[in-house]
Image (cartoon, rainbow, N blue to C red; front, side, top):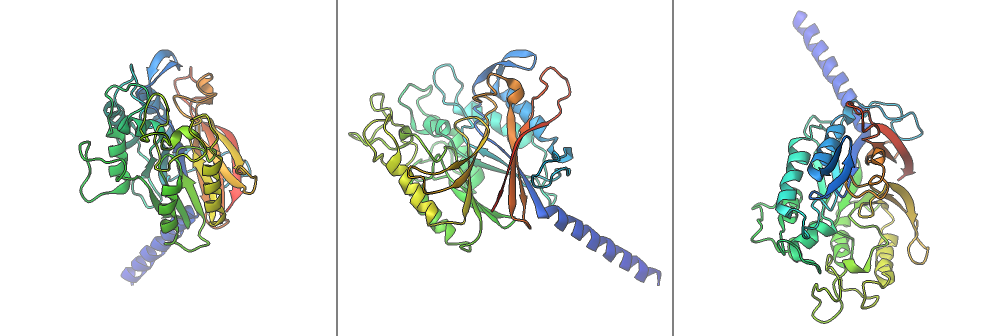
Length: 380
């Protein structure tokens, strides 16, 4: 009899634990930042001057580790007022290393510092008890270090961050190395299904070649499965990102195209020209895939929610932009505005909330408390 009662009690406890886990998984949380720019220094940070990106990112990671015991504000967003708890993934949308121009450390050193901070020092867990995923996309600085730039780099090329991102995200059976990495062949794009949402990660910008891959990727999921795009540059991208349309299509100091994507620039012959034709291509793709519900990017270095309407104002794509710990448009002038983002997904209501989290709101205090900034919720 005692054994039966004991077994029944254990079974009840197991069911209660299972229900608790399922309840936690109803709301999924992600930390998202961008443009870590290892290799730069900040003139002023807390009580110090000329502080390295390694030290500043370490301070940010320390604050990220506090997220599970932090409570959301009592706003109108997803999980309002609740303890945040588990974090499914930390997302970084590019420019992990700063471009290694004269006076800036190499991509190899920058990547090693990123590994220390974002792999060794992050101690966050998912709902299932495993370590939180790290999801990365490359930025224009990472790519330029690997393929060269129209101004001198020292050394001229160092593909360490591209190799590191590729091996971590693409999981090749045999990891590539600095000697056999090929930018034209070794593309960094991948997807994950998390909480009934399809997360798509593409390189610097979803140009025509990336959209070919995305087209095939989207065929593998139901047409009505909501999808989010994570990339480095905003939809209204710059001409310099494209392949040089002049001469031998090379990267050179006269034309100043950076060849960050495979698509040859069609709008003109100068980096000062608009990208209307290229944006039209993206709009057509998005209109044919109505299940793409949001777009997340860095590059322009400040936190913002906005709707992208395209050149002809015939699309309304919710977009979220991230601050940078090193190059923030506003946080570089006011360190109390340094922020990363918490993405919260309610898988039952099909709502997404992005909250701006100020991680250095009291720079002169020994113990930092996280504070909340902008909040925006969309239904997907």
